Image (tube, rainbow, N blue to C red; front, side, top):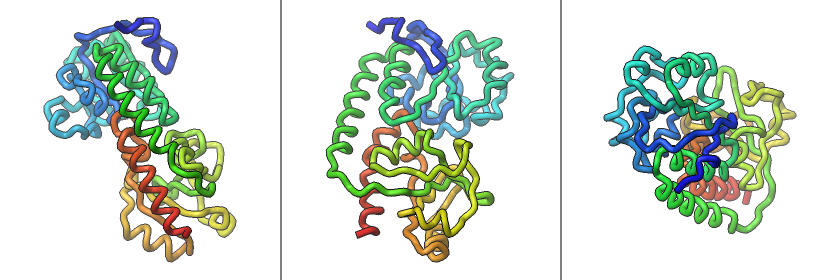
Length: 269
């Protein structure tokens, strides 16, 4: 049985086991994790961006986006628990919801292995400890397979999430931590976690490759082809969900990292 003293969220708030909870999730990746832990029936609300697993989430009422939520609709759903994330949800909105939702569970994974604590927190609060431990065992197996790869050259890669303006990620983001598992680093382009930048000869000279993400901006192969011609260095399209979604998708994300490494190393050979 879960020790309640271990059920502490990202803000240090302690939670009690609540297997009969009515949950609203404002975090797409955690909605997927909750479903995979067998908690779809406990989810009474989710965002329009909570699209996985599709067959299960279609039956769960939408309450808006991750930032523009319908507060009145959430009130009518009478949740006992709200699951939020520091990066994805806005504090003023969460504060308004906290006026009538008794329990706010705040999450903030910043590196791949933080998914272990995340799964155990969700499983412990919502009565799915055994399912969470099985998930953690699968994660450890995938992580071990990734770490068993032979060491390769360290590389500097620019991970792009937007254009007009061009935007990237800083070194203290989950995406950068994923890339660091390959021994790669992103250039530091300023103090912002998701900095804007301009292409320059000095920037391009320090890069081994550019990665264009399929989300939040919908980069395509056409973008990669055009940018590669412009820059004269390898440019690759990568699956944004695999690189940035924690929770359930992190399992597939660890496998996907091996594919990304093979692409980049193949171009460098």
